[in-house]
Every structure is written in structure tokens, then in C-alpha cells.
Length: 542
Image (cartoon, rainbow, N blue to C red; front, side, top):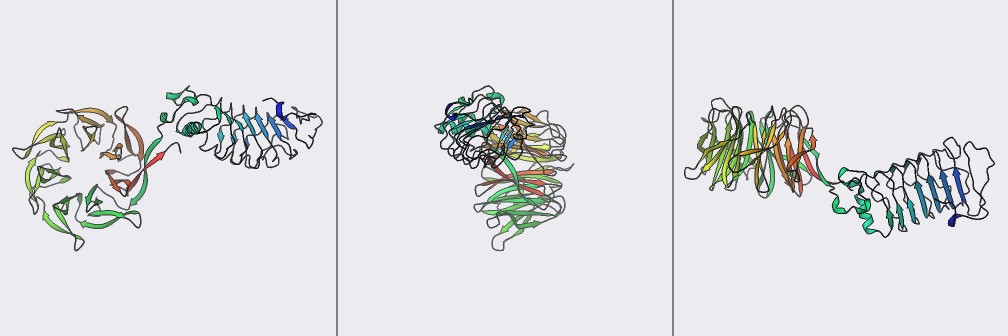
């Protein structure tokens, strides 16, 4: 930066502080002449931590600080020199510019902060510089700039940002957007990362180059009880959730409280050692199937008039020994209920609704200690997958002539699967297979059998739950010994990638619930508080 031009005057008085200087100090006259401060860090006039050099005439219009010892510019650093029109910092150790560093400089038109070590500029650092025309932050150590840094600089016509190691991620998107809407010219330099844009000129970036919208699960509410299962359901146009509480010995039904803006329990069914409760609406009536390890499993009916549940029937007292999971579904117009039995001598049983209750329809997979049952459709055929602790998961398909499920195939190379959950993606059917020891898997149905897509390490996992929330697809892998892992589907690779960790103790179930344009994920904990997370959207460029 030259020291002549429009800021020179004759005669020229310069305050020159030489290294180790001892020469006479000349005060500039009260008319507008430039002042150059050239000094090292041991110079008392320039090496200050509370602002610029003191003792300068308040009416100077040009000030250059060369090789000064400043490390930061604080709020109000130039209140003593309100007439400045040009300010230059160069070849110094300056590293930080704080909010309102230039407050009071209403006449400043040219600001050069070049060849320093500036690595951080606060978002309101330039606030109040309404007359600024020319700004240079060239050749510093800036990797990004705060959003709206140039807000209010209506007179700005030129910006120089060359020579900075900009990391061109979402934090810099606002600058690309500003360049497309401003009349100011700019020299920007090139990106030093991330990898896909490394070496690209900043001026060549476009808004569509940035993918800055992401999501997160944020803790919203804790429920002070342990739980085994969480089952969302619709009833009378509202979404509710049923939660199995094994230690409290009940099934609780929760709804959204519009006044408190939180979930609350409005009804419960007391029992003995419940392991699952399955709500379903049959012929307009709300039923809840409560499976228990002791005291029998029962079907309960909601009485609207009294606002409570009444017991409708005991479910298969001679068939159900040790229930572990429930699945309800409709096939050919009939309602069915499948109960996975994990006892050594038991059999998973299929019950059919007969108008007044559920009655035994078919025994499946005897003597295999089934731990989970999942209903899905494969190539348009109603199907069941039974997970077992004694063999591979078995796939059954519905036979319309016999009105029964027949064994179709098994899932290869997956012994000791605790649970199976399915999801659909782009017309394909996938399953998440949970294993307590060994890798859990994502597999895809390919016409006659399931094939591997992806392995996830899962020491101590009892649940691997796929979730679809809006356009986002997740899979949550629980862990009894560490954090649960949330994976998010990446369409480019066709795989799930690690996305977030959840601190839920010994999770047994995850479920998505949508109420009033808000999305929540319930996490049932076997050892701690059951937690509710809110699914939020985050703009990384904001």
C-alpha cells in the first residue's frame, strides 16, 4: 500500500518510530496528514493491549500501523481517532478482530488489514462502517468469515480476500450468496479445502455446490420409568403411543398435551411382568394386547364412556408359554396377531380375529425359542420372518388356498438373530437384523432370498430399528454397554453412515411419532429413563 496518492500532503509530517528508536517525536499538524507507525513489539507506543497508540491527534485522517505488536482489536479501539478515513494494519501479529472494533469511525472509507495473522473476525467487527468503500483482509490466516459480516456496509465497492486458507464448507456459503447479490467487485483467492473443492477459485463456487441442510435428534423429554417396547398407533385421528413398563407392571398409553407441549399418560393397563403391549384398532374399537411372562396374556378393550380399559379375553392360555414379541396385521380382510414364543417347548402362534376375540389359527416354528416376529410383504406376498436363538431367521409366505403361512426360505449366514425389522427404499425391501454378539446386518430382498448389503459391529445390541422421518432414512443400533449409534442413509453410496450417538441406557425399542408437524423418536430404556428425542433440521450455513 503506497503512502502517497490522495492521502499525501505537503509538507508531510510522519510519526516514525524506528526499531529501538530514540529520535525526536514530531507531532503531526492539526490539518489532515497521514501518520505512519512503524515499530516492533518492544515499542511502548505500538505494543498496547487496550487499543491503538495513544497520543495521536484526534483529527488525523490516515493511520498506518506497520509491524505493530497488537494481537487483537477490541471494541472501541479507535474512539480516540474518529476522523480516520484510511486505516492500515500490515506485517503485524494481529490475530483477532472483535465486535465493534471500529465503532465511531463514521468517515472511514479505506480499511487494509493485510499480511497479518488474522484467523478470526467476529460477526459484528465491521458494524457501523457505513462509509466504507474499500476493504482488504488479504494474506491472513482466515479459514472462514462470519455470516452477515458485510451487513450494513452499503457503500462497499471492493473487497480483497486473497491469500487466505479458506475452508469452503457450509460456513462460507453465505459469502457465495452475497457475491451473487452485491454490486461490489471482489478478489477472493482459492479454497484450501475440503477435498472436493480444494484448489477451486472461490469465485467459481455456486450455491448448488453446497449441501448444508442436516438433521439431529435432540433430547426433548425424559419419562421416569424403564420400558421394553414402544408402539405408536392412530386412534380417532390422533397419534398415540403405548409403552410397556416391565418393572412397574403396566402398559401406559401416552398422548400429546397441547397445553403443556409435552407427552403425558392418559390411561394404563396393570399386569404382571409385561413384555409387550400391542395396540390396534379393529372394527373401530381400540384394543390392546398385553403379553406377560406370568398371569397370562390378555386382550383389553377401550371403553369410551368410562374412559378406561376392560379385559376382553385371555389369549391362548394353553398355547402361549413365554411370549417375547407381538405383531398385528391384516391379510385378505382378516386381522391376525402373531405371538413369538421363546420357551423351549413353545411355538409361535398365529391368532385370527373372530368378531369377539382372537382365536388360534396356526402354530408356527415349534421348539425353536423364537424371539421376534415381523410382518412384511415380499413381491406382493404377505410374509412373516421369525427370529430365533437356535437357528437362522425363517421366512414364511401366505398361501391363499390353504389360508396359512408356509415356510419359504431362511436367511443365510445369520445365526442367533434376536430381532428383525424391515423397511422399504426405492421399491426394494430391506431388513435390519439384530445380533447381541457379532455383526448386525442390513440385507435386501432379491427375488427369492435376502442378500448382504452392510455389516455393523454390534456388541450388546438388542435392537436395530429402521426409521423413516420425512425424506430421511435412519437406522438406530442400540447398545447395552456404550452409546447407541444412529446411522443415516447416504443415497450416493447406498449405505448407512454413522451420524449421531444417543446416550440411552440399554435401549430395547425405538419408534417414530409425528404430532402437529413435529417428529419425535421414543427410546425405550431397560435400565434408565425412557427418552423422547425431537427430530430437528439444522442449516449449517446459518
